[in-house]
Each structure stands twice: as structure tokens, then as C-alpha cells.
Length: 68
Image (cartoon, rainbow, N blue to C red; front, side):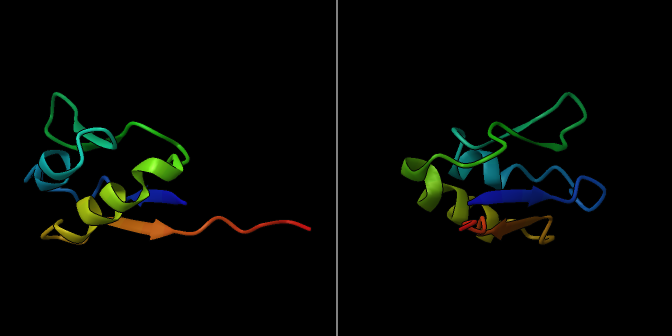
């Protein structure tokens, strides 16, 4: 899975980083930065939880397609 961050929508509340610091952090302007391009399987639940708590819906979870 991967997370897509809408940095223009981010208001810097930091709930994502509080919930899943292994996945999200805030830059010097308090805008979300993703720590992984593709979320490792062991962090998927945390990544989803961090996306869910965003009050402005700036984070979206996407499943990676499996190519045959």
C-alpha cells in the first residue's frame, strides 16, 4: 500500500505524526511528509490509522496493484 498526501490541504495538525510517527512526520512548516514511498506491511495498520485521524482529509490510502 501507499499513502498519498495532499500537502496543499494539510493544515499541520500533526495527528497523523502523533498516531504513526514511523510513517508520517511534519516538516519545518508543519506540513506532512511521508517517511516511506511504499508502506512496509508491518506499518500498514498504523499508516491507515494516521490517515483516518487527519481532520482535513489530506491523506489517502491506496492499494498497490499487482501486475501479472
